[in-house]
Image (cartoon, rainbow, N blue to C red; front, side, top):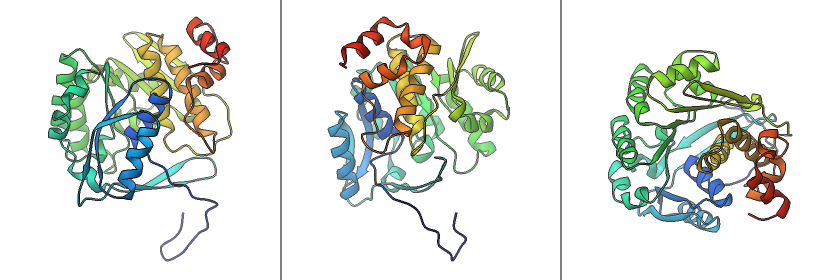
Length: 309
């Protein structure tokens, strides 16, 4: 990292349509899951690129508002040689994304099986109380609610934690990474973190552990699935891609272990690629057979062997 007033040289740069909702929706759509985004972009070159890229992946964007006179949010991600990253973000139009914008497209929520609220700290117009209301309404309508907050740029103040704990009772699937789960619970071991989050009201706790794999806890059941060993190109968005794989398995009513293994597989393909980074279902199915729990799934084996999505 450069010192103030100094400069260091990077090796290359790329520009992507991204954000937690963007990555998650593009990855799910590439797996063949009908996906719709409710959000906003600015009426500028970046906003138009995001809409075009979502459309290319087949993501439905009727819930995305293009706002005149407001800039699209942008993040600069600095990536180390080992794939670890740090971010500097200007939220742009996300500062004025609001509960009313979601309510205006509630018909899209009602047509979904899983409702994901992601990047909560990047949408300051959605308070914790608003998030709890929206998720409670979705649960009442029979939806599976999923939350991935991302990292709190205020570093998890007492006020933040108190607010988050008002949201958790409305969350069916909570998907933090290990650092986030540690900050939220104040605990270090995975089972302790999961039990604390379960006591807060979450049904399924899924913790992403980077190169150590992933962990899930539900009821009295828990499991750990190791990561696939790959050469990392770029880990930005890896958690969101993992989320897509886990949710795909959840839609298929797979076991916790199979959902984790599928999430690990799709994330491993994504972080090791330089181009065409969002894997197709057949690619994940083929590689995923490295995990016994996935190779035992007849439907997935059929996809892999017949080379179709």
